[in-house]
Amino acid sequence: MKTVEILGANRFETYTKTREGCRAIIVQDGKILLTHELISGWWLIPGGGLEEGETPEDCVVREVEEETGYLVRPLRRFLFLCEYYEEYRYPGYFFICEVTGTGQIKLTDAEKRRGVQPEWIPLQDAIDLFSKHESYADVSEEKRGSYQREYMALREYMNLAPDSPERQIYERFPGVSCAYRDAAGREILKYDGMADTENAVPVDGNTAFPACSISKFVTAITVMKLQEQGVLQIDEPVNRYLHQWKLLAADGTESNATIRSLLSHTSGIVDAEDSFYGLRRSDAEISVLDVLEGRTTYNNRRAVSEKQPGTEFEYSDAGYCVLQLLTQEITGRSFEEVVAENVFEPLRLQKTFFGSLRNLGLREQSQTMASGYDSEGFPIPGKYPQIPDLAASGLWSTPGELMAIAEEFIEAVNGRSSILSSASAREMIKPTENFSWVGLGIFRRGDDTLVSQGWGENGQCMLKMNVVTGEVSVVMTNKDPGVEQNESGVEALTDF
Image (cartoon, rainbow, N blue to C red; front, side):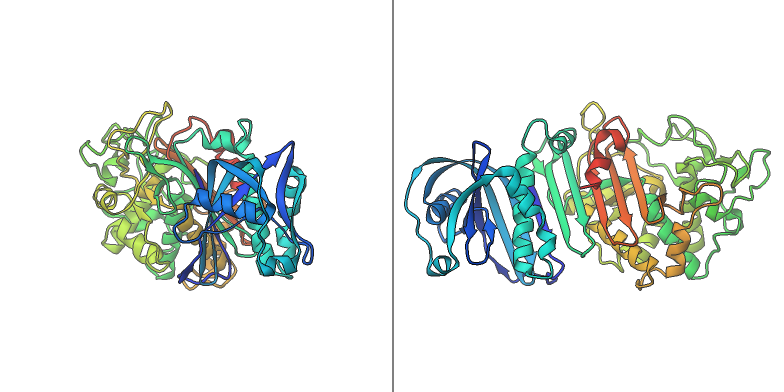
């Protein structure tokens, strides 16, 4: 059963009141049964509050009869939709029901005064009606929120059809989790499926997924923070700060590749083919130095700046390994500790971390983590791979917490962040010379839209944000679909 959480922009940090409810989708001959308030003009899906001692099934049967006079039988509970407004939490169960007979309408006095009556209208008309929920934002937040809820429920009802594109995308993955923020600051979390199929663990809003190469976006933020602290300059050669290991040019001399060129994948490093995957937690732990030296099958070629920096774009995990080593050397601390201090802790993120072997072991004891599945659908041995290149692809998070990072970044671009300066954020989104679609740790889609995406052997994901409107979407999964985001459907889900 899919879950949708609607987080109102006016919600309090913690809710103190809860009211459970149930609603019925009743469709006959292409028409849906709604209640219509003649005085206010409101339309709603039949349903209401759960009474003490009632099951959700009992509740929906009672409410439909009281409001419409129809007797119904619940066929399927297909959606759990939870709304958060001010201090309230409204959990709601949506059922597909069929009419079995007629009973007696029993309206409350308030409902009688509002002129509540049942009406059948074409299903598509109902969808169109509720889709205009945003037009009521300046008139009535209650009406806007109610119409948004009904619209979301009808969308999910339509997604039950076998030919629904969204359903087909969701069915490609064991588990899918999404987060969306609109231009008004309202947020939606949406998730379905299994975090761990073998142990029947469902995905929930706190399930951490592999963020794969979205790691690079967070790494870039961290590097820019270190520049703000005065410990590095991104336009200096990276070798100025490296002591354990040096980045060499093709002729064996020290490369003049800058930190900026590493962030923008223009340092001249070319990753070895068939590298950066296949390492298991049961394998011997390898270090970022092992990766850079090419001492293992995980990466069997030394990282070298083979081309003149700035002349070609070559997407490089090895380049971000250099940044990982850089971070460790100039701070004298582990990479994951530095990022946590500069990014995760200021944002109060609880479920986001870089997955060193130690962290994986600790986190799997304290939170739900999505088990990985390969392109054939088989479980990854040990549930999650070992990722020594943390800066490149070792991040774990939830869509909600990745959305929080994106929101803070948008605030930084617009000069409203206490974590990252506007100058740093704007440097990250500035077009790279000769490669206008490339920023620092992020990719540009036109002037206003930014994208970060990841694809590994245990999942695929995508983050999209608009720095002008404030809109954000994040999609995370726990299976390698075998094709890129625009083919797997992950990108389509970001356009929700």
